[in-house]
Amino acid sequence: MIAAGLLAVALAATAPEPAARIRADQLQAAQAALPAMTFEAAQALARSGRHAEALAAFEALAARNPEDFDSRVWLGRLLAWAGRRDDAIAAYRDVIARAPRYVDARVGLAGVLLALGRVDEAWDVIEDAEALAPGNPDVLAIKGRALRRLGRPSDALAAFDAAYARTPEDTDLEIVRERTRRMVAHRAHVSVAQEASDDVPETSIVDADVDLHVEDGLRVFGRLQWQQRAGFDDARGGAGLEWHAAPRAILRGAFLLSPGSPRLARTDVGGEVETAAGRTQPSIGVRYLDFAGAQVWVLGPAISVDVNDDVAIALRYYYSRSTFQPSGRTRGDQSGALMGRWQASRRLSLSAAYARGYESFDILSVDRLGRFRADTIAGGTRVDLRSLTSLAVGVEHQWRTGDRQLTRITLDIVQHF
Image 1: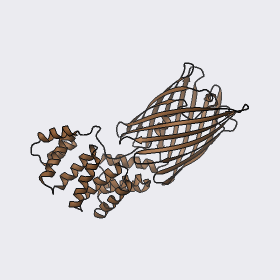
Image 2: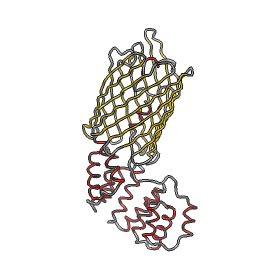
Image 3: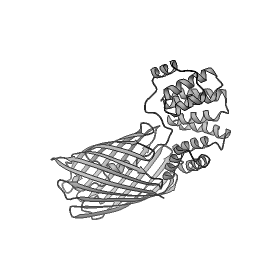
Image 4: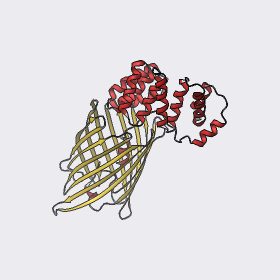
């Protein structure tokens, strides 16, 4: 189901970045009207969200005194927030060249490099910063972010814990620490869906799994599915694993079995490979489903992009090939889905999706094979609680061939432990 699939979208936790870039004309106007300003006043402008004025102020302060490294670090920070990351890197490197022991410049530089996906370069900078200030909470926090990107969430959590112990008032650090705890915890997930359709009785679906963190890079899970539809009860169970073969390569595999099931696949086996390049995660998966009277192969390439720290989009394409027994007739079908997520606040996210054809292969029933055509729209919201509980509600509406319609409401509960 689209709503359930969106619940599992991976969540980046990096420094905030304003939605609008600072235009050159804004900066020139701010500089023209700029009176002599102190560092404290410029800092107050930045913290109040008046970034164009703050950038102009810090440029003036830096030009006035080349040894004012505090102003130059703020200048790099504002350039990064404005999307001028190459300029930010140059500003930070200039400070490091002039004052090699100035730790804040190395922290800022590492943050920009991480945002650009240049993780190995960022790690070298962080190691230098840690050698200069091993107990600095900002160094520990950026180290934790880098360790997460390197596929070492347990080590990242240790770094975040150490940083948070020194700065418990840092709410941004509290959130990223909590999200990292979710990454290394076991989790239990229950999804309950109710379908109402023009042409069949109401359908109830329960999908539950327990996912165990064996070690960094390896998770195993067990899964149960149950469906009640048109007077038939279908149930199946299975297991799977997720293995991080490398920091930027993930392998997933799973199977579900349901001997004698009248509608669900009696054998459902699949695998997926996902990689990462900066903020982009391409993947490709393959599935085999053996129904009573039909066998289906599915190929599903996909790509997910973190547009910025708060917005992610994903595009998935499916090609399926069905063989019907006893005739041996075959048929090919194509489907696609576009999904988006917006982190509206620290604990609230919103999602939306559109699908053409099959909206999901999670619980594909035999009656939908053959000439199935549909358009589906979906929306949902998720809340992450301090108790490491996530609650999500999703609504989908589907228009099928022959003016038939279906509405599905889904409730997801995830508990990390």
